[in-house]
Image (cartoon, rainbow, N blue to C red; front, side, top):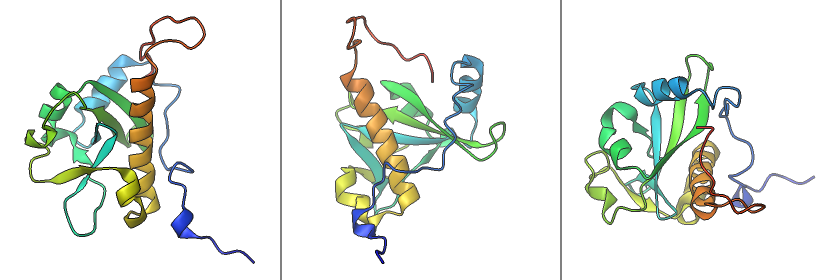
Length: 161
């Protein structure tokens, strides 16, 4: 009988977030989520995730109320999904800030953690933490690399959160 080998865990598999597919075009709802103080932000900078600065790295999700500077500095913000009740759950957003030369100087990030490649910290994270970081990084990577439609060549734009 084979046992699950955690050293080969795939962080892209599974996930606990509700992608809220039916509500992603509702701009008012997205704005309410972004204004909710319980909302969590996952900064992504040059394909690296923000992790806690400690001997054992952990995921560093920033509370929305403490990160207005991060929102203002963002190139792009994308809804990852909701945890819990769709009408009262906690929203998670990836925040792309790769255009900044020194993002760690933003008040929300200063002395709170560091940016790291998920491959260097992934084995030290729990699966749910790893899934969130991998998802945030993967979505931002895709958005950075797909500015034009692969079929017709028209510019792409984010329409669903």
